[in-house]
Image (cartoon, rainbow, N blue to C red; front, side, top):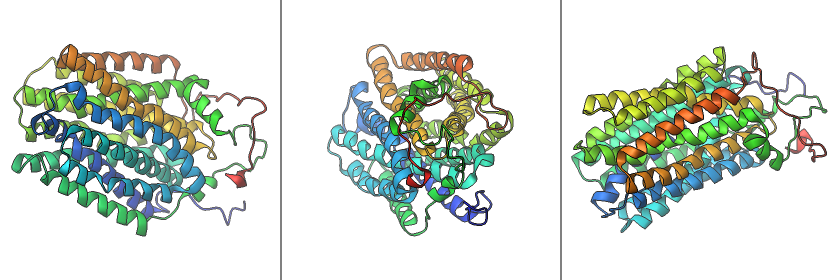
Amino acid sequence: MSSDTTPRQGIREHLGQFSLHVLLVFATGLTIGSERAVVPVLGRDVLGVESLLVIGSFVVSFGFVKGLLNLYAGKWGSEYGRKPVLVLGWLTALPLPIILIYAPNWAWVTVGNVLLGINQALTWSMAINAKIDIAGPEQRGLAVGIDEAFGYGGVAVGAWVTGVIAAGTNLRPEPFYFLGVVVVLALLISVFLIQETVQLARAEIDDDEDHHDANLPFHEVLKRATYGDRTLFAAAQAGHIEKFVDTLFWLAVPLYLTSEGLGIAAVGLVVGVHSAMYFLQIATGGLADRIGRRPPVIAGMFLAGGGVLGMVLVEGYLPWVVLSGVSGLGMALLYPNLMTVPGDAAHPTWRATGMGVYRMWRDSGYGVGAILIGLSMEFVSAEAAFYMTALLMFVSGAVVWTWMEETHPEFGTHEPPAPASGHSRRSVAED
């Protein structure tokens, strides 16, 4: 491919499209954030669900669906382009506000969260892949940091806004009118303003036809990103476990704090502060472009675990806000840089698929975490869920410390293994 016809990468060169994708990932965050403070309390106080394990079922359905669809979203994004998958993701969210407004029982909410899982998998997967397409290798960490910062900034704003609306009106329907507006606007932007970016990823492809890593088949990518590479395994297991923290703040924290006498608006702020700290990913993603991925990931795992542990060792609104922020800071350090690891290690021809595998293992942590957290709260105590999550974060951080090599393209030490001999190859033109 000649240099004069190769599409140029760079955030500045594609600032308009990059900004639209930032706006859309903010909308994706608003969508899931609209459930964070309100829906668990809705189940307990309006729909009459007494079992904490049953309340957790809506996170279980979300997590497993999102995890599985993450795997295929990356594959579809490579085969059909980022935009069609993005539009499909917003279409699936259209019924969600209606379901939450009119759901006669908790089963309807659980089914609604299947649609939320599809929406989040497709829209957020394409948001991150489009930003990586645009940014190129030199700004990959920054692009991921911006994506996650605005996505989780949206989660924070969604939790806070719906908490305020619910406190001033009712737990429903008013908070979900806000959700409906967000979904419709995001769909319109995706259809009429977003342009395709997959051609920018293909511009990175090395012209070397003998590059052994260029055309891994799907099963080989799945194997490598799961267990065939110790560094990618360390990233996948850390991504899976850190979702327990996110699940805790979605499921357990609102129920725990309201049982301690905190009002729904105050709970929305505590949960929102945790998510708002993710906005620092703009800085932590850019930092990893300068110092590497490994140091912030390790620091973040232990800091987030410490913040979770502290939540049940203190009492009072202000200490809860502070420790919520501490755990959020840890997540801001680890979150974008874990996701950048498979981005670094993958060839451009299978990067979207490799990212999908990582995101599958990461977001299935919602489902596993919701089951374990729900069991802990149901049969032990609410505090037990916090202790369990903190312990798992510390153990997972130790695995990262032991096995994860640096993947930064400039000074990384990670050398990917050669693919299995005899695997099928495709030409770059076929991808």
